Length: 116
Length: 113
Image 1 (spheres, one colour):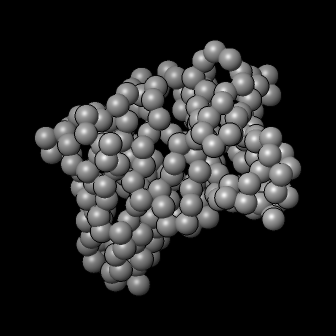
Image 2: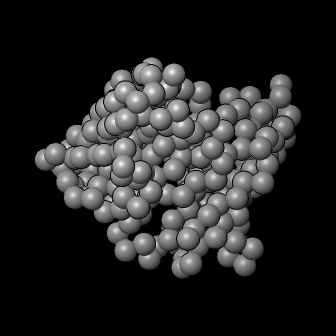
């Protein structure tokens, strides 16, 4: 069975400072990893993914994430936070060897609050 | 490109009643997913379709939940009878293939009284 842990319910960052939202995962095989963002009363919006290749992945709105296989982590980062980045962030995983069953397993989400 | 469309956006029913949700995926997306998002939790996969066939329904409570995807396009998710613990947002997502991101609709918020 696969699982995702987002250890922080909430992360508070001052505008202009770097931000990190943590994610660790567990899969039996090799992972596909994703970050999504959710604004109030909206569906999830895709930010970035790791499939294979470079461990540092760049995505939308200046976000990036680093895949660390030894630590089974995929932390989301941004060099300079904006107030508009305030939202709910989800990390998700699926096993590459899912045999066609490729629904995502999500973490419980982290509220990111950027203070002006 | 038009996004994933879901309706209704909100639904309030009493326990033991039945309810249905509708999803229209992005044109050309062969794979369709239904997720349940309970307040304070991440989405949980209920069912995955590939065209009009079910790929994974291992987490679907089949005694009360059913889903279909006629003609491999639109899909409906039904709950009959509803229980209080079914109060959640039901999200539909679609994807052109497994290596590409899933695109989500805005969901249907279901409240059970």
